[in-house]
Structures are given as C-alpha cells and as structure tokens.
Image 1: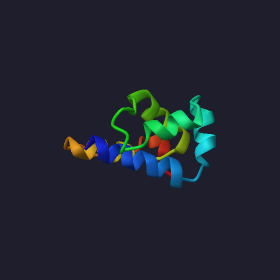
Image 2: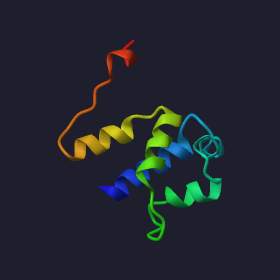
Image 3: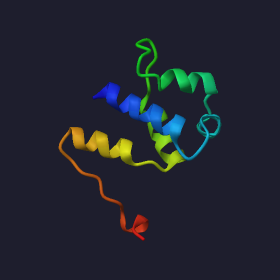
Length: 84
C-alpha cells in the first residue's frame, strides 16, 4: 500500500493542476528533494506524513486520503463546508 500511495502522490505532483515546482515551493521543499521523496522506486527516500498532508492541501487533491482510508476499511466524505 505504501508504494501505491507514493506512486499516486508522484502522479498528483507531476500530472496535477499545479506545476511540480510550484507545489515544491508552496510546501517549502527544494524541488529535487520533493521529486526524490515522491519517487516510489527510491528505497532510500521516504515520503513523510507531513509532506503528504502538505501536498494534499496545496493540490486540493483528496484521492490520496481516500486511498489511505479505503485501505483500512473507511471512507472519506466532505464536511458541510466543502459541499457545494
């Protein structure tokens, strides 16, 4: 599951609505460091929970959270503030 989350995070950062360099800047990480941390094939680099949360906030992407919740038998629903 961890590799799956890291791969999904890589896709969100590299293929998302915001350029990856902008995401890195907004979360306060050097671009090269962020790319290494989201590389699912780099066994020596780790994606931390704080970085994952920051990425979700900056990209406004919830599929990562949904995947984590789903893997342990839960679902995610938006709060009333986020329902249109």
